[in-house]
Length: 108
Image (tube, rainbow, N blue to C red; front, side, top):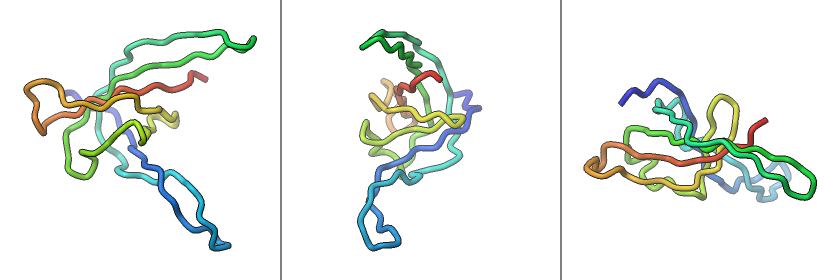
């Protein structure tokens, strides 16, 4: 695996603010994780007279206990852009070696 990009995996958490209120926020699950990156597609769509573009990317990371339960409820940050995770899987014949993360981000 040629993992030469750094990513951060984030998980939504509930914390208390300065007023004692519970608020949802994103906290790092793991930072500075080396990943292999492959752009799968980019697409444009027109909705309600607004054009939006997305970039779909597949990231491959070394499997680890601390994020083995990663799911579409989590997200990924790469080069300052936030990606929504759509799928997480272990490729065939790589049991507990590699995780593939499919994710999409809005193109800016």
